[in-house]
Image (cartoon, rainbow, N blue to C red; front, side, top):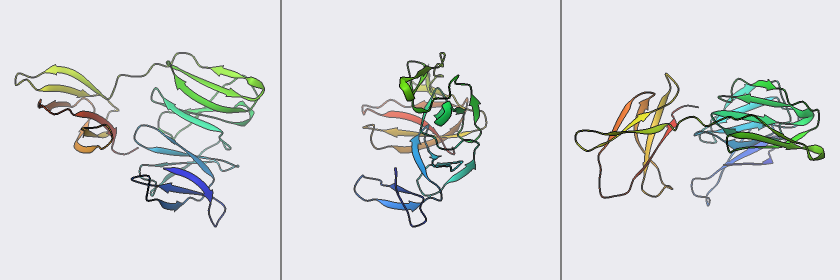
Length: 206
């Protein structure tokens, strides 16, 4: 998915493709840039548009008004969204819906933010670099619990209580097929075969 040229109304267009060859355009009613998180995209408002939108397909958008505008960059790590912008603003959110301001200690504009090595780093005007404290990743959504008496692999789904997840399988890490739905704490068993399979879990709804 990409967010690019302004449409007839002066806002951004969302451009999606299933194969990087055929593209479809969906109009958006505010200026935005996109960042990808745990199974969904978040569109962050720019040019004074105090909004964010969540989408899993680039066609349907769950929109929320926010107190910040003119986001310059955003990233997702350790189950947390972080966005930065002019005047040194930093906001964080666990789900891209409710956002909390975080003190930055500067009024210099922040232009970029990234997560790695269990910390967030923001960079901005006049060469300023800000680094958060340690923010470790939580355990993976799928963790191996052992083998069953029938020599099947046993996994446990870790996630938010009450949220439904879709477990997918793949043979090449490029093409994924829905295998089953599950909730946090549920045990999954996988029969061993000679073929190589990969598995992942994604939130069914952002």
